[in-house]
Image 1: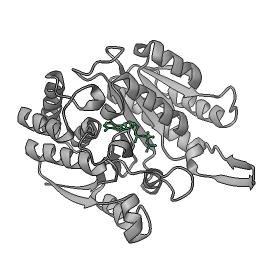
Image 2: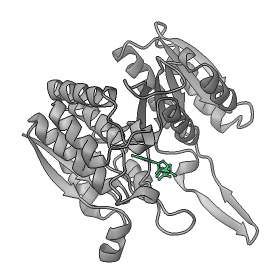
Image 3: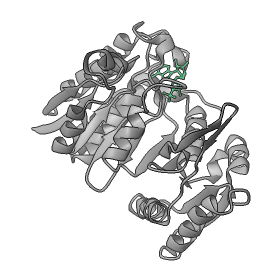
Image 4: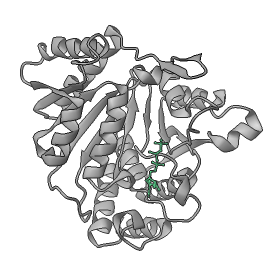
Amino acid sequence: MHNLTLIKGDGIGPEISDSVLKIIKASGVEINWDIQTAGADVINQEGVPLPKRVTESVKKNKIALKSPVTTPIGKGFRSVNVQLRKELDLYANLRPCYNLPGVKTRYENVDIVVVRENTEDLYAGIERQVDENTAESIKRITREASLRIAEFAFNYAIKNNRKLVHAVTKANICKLSDGLFLNCAREIAQKYPQIEFKEILVDNCCMQLVQNPNQFDVLLLPNLYGDIVSDLCAGLIGGLGVAQGANIGNEYAVFEPVHGSAPDIAGQNKANPTAMLMSAIEMLNHIGEKNAAERIKNALFKTLESGIKTADLGGTATCSDFTEAIISCL
Ligand code: ATP
């Protein structure tokens, strides 16, 4: 029996969480879920979107599965996602992007892993209103955080039989901040001569990704570019509905889809639970339930191949139809 935390989120969060929980239960893995709510609805009752009980639960269980939580644009509370990553020191954001069977995309054989630094850069939230008409955001990059994310990327490459790491920056313009990130990547690259190391500017990288994604293997990026480029990579493999993710630190790990809470389709039984399910599959691998992870993945792939798909992938299945189809494949 595993003790794990589930953060239910808002928007489509509850629907896709229920779907994934049902599928995991059907696989026979025994999990004692500590279900925690966070996000917009919690603010009314508890005053904050990320109450202490949520981080305490993750600290106790070490591993969490998380569905999206809305980040209001402009004023309001600090992003729950950013806060959680900071408080648990989940410094590495890992987003593997590969083609799924039955999901038609422009390119075949895309297999890219985005490794995004998760704790600093423009996401550190250091902003100030200079005067009525001027605002500033500080792009903070440190040697310590850059070295450890580079180490994570190369270590991941070795463990997962990857051959090439690209450091993606804008070091020609942000000479000090991105320059530091790049220098740290160069330093770590020297320790891993068996992995090829290349450098690319983020704008060129975006163009190359949409023209020839097969040239890329592992991408190593500071926080903001990592956020943007991983959505681009999600687009290469069928969109946000299928893009998985994980936030990993030395002590804790939180597995969550790349997408947001999709308020435009919330509560309509239209959401695609694939991204959340793929994240859960990685979580099962992480806790050693490799057999169940494999069986769920096969059931998901069979379902997609058979043409049962949600609307975002051009299908007509509802979230619950899709869930039931996966369960019957299991
Ligand atoms: P955030 O800033 O919180 O990451 P976002 O601006 O990236 O959010 P999303 O909430 O991810 O926005 O949604 C972007 C678009 O993708 C929306 O049209 C949404 O409906 C769609 N979308 C996202 N996730 C899913 C999903 N699981 N199934 C179907 N459509 C989705």
